[in-house]
Image 1 (cartoon, rainbow, N blue to C red):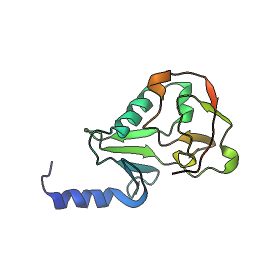
Image 2: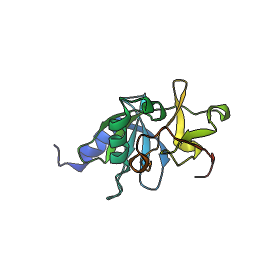
Image 3: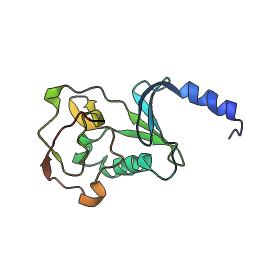
Image 4: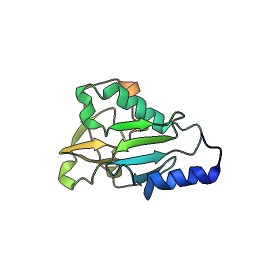
Length: 146
């Protein structure tokens, strides 16, 4: 691997295009090379939201619960970069009244459409580990708050 910082910048600029969102621990970028994906870059040490999303996807991808999650495609060896399928914005009618208990963070910006299904594309703080693969639904109090 190159130890040359300008080379790393070149690779980043090749892979990433537009900054879509900056949250508390990650920045989300569109990708020049993978237009159907986003790259989530986690620069702050010790947060591990990319790892949580990757591990969650590994557990649900072959189950019926996969319908609630945006697909993770790849993760860097140290977890600082996650490649996820890009979703498209949802309309007001796409947000159901009841949602799985393990999703818990019902900010509209955390969700988008994959095909005809509303999915969570920001599940780095989900509660799947606490509740397990429960079919239990809870009333979703949808919020537009950041």
